[in-house]
Length: 489
Image: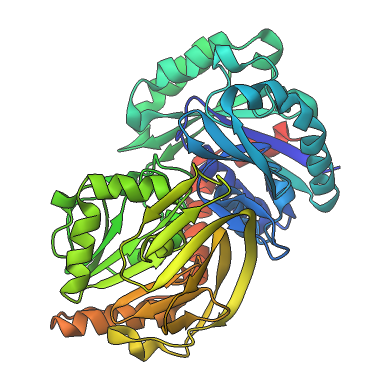
C-alpha cells in the first residue's frame, strides 16, 4: 500500500490545494509515483477524464503535477452547488442526482465505501498519496460523520500537515485555535504546521515559529512565501475575480452567479498586454475587445440574473456593434433564441435567450460528459482565419442545442455554431492550444491597431507544467522535506 500524507487547512482557501500539488510534483521529481486524493470536493470547476467521468479540477491539477493521468477515483465525491442549499452529487465520476444539503448530510456515510474503495484502488497504483482535506477540520457542527478531514485521516491512518494563511491575518489564532479545538486523537495526527502566503523576509518570523512550536507543541514544517504562480483555481474564492483594470487588450468574462470552469480563459494570462476581467454588472463592462460568457451550473437562473442587472442588454448592444462575443457551454446556450427545461433539470420552464445565434436548447436529464478532439469546422466574421485549427477539450453539459435555420457549424459534431462575430461552443479548453489563442488575440488586436506580443505564448499544457516546476522549487526551499518524508514513514 502507498505511503500517505494529508494536507488540511485552517479555513477554505488557506492553500491546501496548492501545497498538495507542489508535494505531488516534488515526489514525482524524487522518482516516486505520486497521486492526489480528495474524498469530497465542492466546486463548480470540473473536468472530464478520457473515460468520460467527472472530477474536480483541483485534483486534475494535482495529477498533472504528479505527471499521471487524472482519474475519477482521485475525487470520488464531487458536489456541484445548484443553489445556496443544494448540490448535484457526483459519485465516482457519475451524477447520482441533486440533493438538498440536509439530505446529503444524512446520506454521506453511505458513500464511505465508495471513498475507501477509490482510495484502495489508488493506493495499489501509487508509491505516495497526497490527500487534501476540505475547509476546516474544526467546523464543530459538521464534525459528526466527517468523511473529508480528520474522519478520513482516521480511516486511512494519515499523518496531517495543517496549513494556515498568514496573508489573511490571524495565523496564530488560525493554527493554535484549530489545534485547541481538535480532540486528542485528532490532535495527535497533526505532525506539522505550515505558515502559507508569507510576504517579506522569513527571518523576521523566527519568533513566530518559536511561539507556534511552544504553544502548539507541534513542529513548524515550513514557512511558504506568497507565490506568483498561475494555477487552476478550485472555487469562486479565486483572487482573479478581483481584477478590475483593463489592459491593452481587454477580455471581459461575464461573472455569472453560478460560474463554472472559469479556468477556460487562464491561457490568455500568459500575455502581458492582455487583461482578463470578470464583470458582474453592466457598469463595469466598458469597451472590451472580446466578451466571453462562461459555463454555469444554472443556465436559466443566471440568464435571468444578467437580464435583470443589465448585462444581457449591454452584451446584445456590443454584438450589434461588431464586438467579438464568445459563449462556452451555458454561455453558448444563452446566445440562442430560447432555453427549454421540460424535465425540471434546473427549475423547469423556459427562458428567452439573447437571440444572437439561431439555435434553441432543450435541457435533458442525461448529462453529456465526454472528451473532445477535433477541429474548427467553420468560422465566420473576424475569426474566419482560425478555420481548420485543431482543438482538444471536453464537454460537460445538460442539454442539446440545435439550429432552427442555416448556420455555420463552428466546432464539429454539433458542439458549436457561429454567426458573424458571435461564436458558441460546448468545448471546455477551447483556447488552450497556442495557435488558437495567438490567432484570436492577434486578429482582434490588429483590427484596433493594437500591438500585442504573442510570440512567447505556449500551449496551455506546457505553460502549466512550467508553473508546476516553479511551485515545486519554491516549496522544496520552504518546507522541511526530510521531516515530511520522516513522518510518512
